[in-house]
Length: 207
Image (cartoon, rainbow, N blue to C red):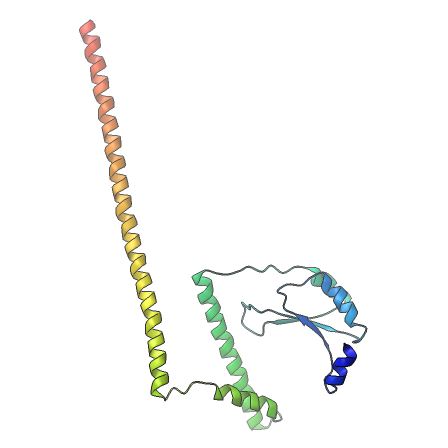
């Protein structure tokens, strides 16, 4: 397989291998030893397909004595499904996007100032990104964004309305339950008082 890869990609140099994790496994060391037959120091890259932190969702490792224990250690992966966690993830994603745009701006400024050489492949990729951006000057695009936003806000409004009605229903039900409990306690108290008066009357008649 390695020879076939060299034939197809003669200009590329293999530096290691990767998997999608999301955690490190004990078998990673065995696979890494297999790659050492072809690469002196293979790099293991773990790609997090569900990133929760800002930044590039990758971790790279080298199989050296100092981090063997770290390779064998499992990383806890907590699944998120609540609304608050989803909103937090969206905020983190927006922060990550802002950081990437800042990096692009810094790179282009350094290229313009001559501090970095021009990389045509990067410029082609940036051009593709900007070409994929929607044209906000078109009326159809603006209308579609407005319709989508209004639909989402309608769902939020209805959800808030249903939540308020359910909370009001629970409050009224709680009031009714408390009133019934108070009536039962008052009835028991009156019954105990009547029984006590009856006993006193019997005792006085016997005397």
